[in-house]
Image (cartoon, rainbow, N blue to C red):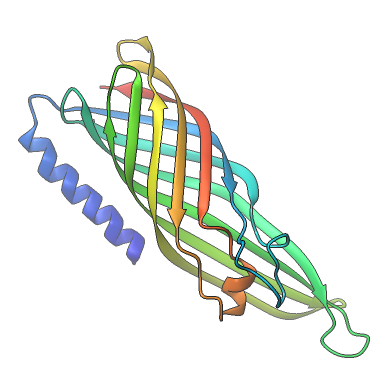
Length: 213
């Protein structure tokens, strides 16, 4: 439901702004492939997870963008991004000689509404992201699945970064980009959220293209 609200708000803003700037507005679309590096959670200690064992590291990310250039130096955009999966495994003994192996995974999807400035080829970017998180935890005792949990939720993140729009033709650009996402962590008392927590910062660097209409 929250992701639908975000999309609805973005669509409403585009509908309001575009007619008001019809003479100057130009639409564009684009996409990029990136490396996304997620920090690990330094607050974890004890229990089943530690900072060294928490989810994090680097994975792939793919994003698209649709935007409207509302003035010579300002544009508004919606940028969805799908990221790869983070995973970790650990074992514990629930009783006696029994050994339980646990696999915890998480995959995030970012829905970002942002404002883009333009200063020559450099374009600073800032906005808000809704991060949809799919968390999974599967426990195996021997060959028997002793428990399985899956849950989806979401969090808000502040997004900042910058692009370099390098023109190939007047309407086609190659765009190296960088983004920093800052969000809050999950509930420490929830076993599934604790096992699938990451740090609060994610950094994306990649390259894409943009077509201006």
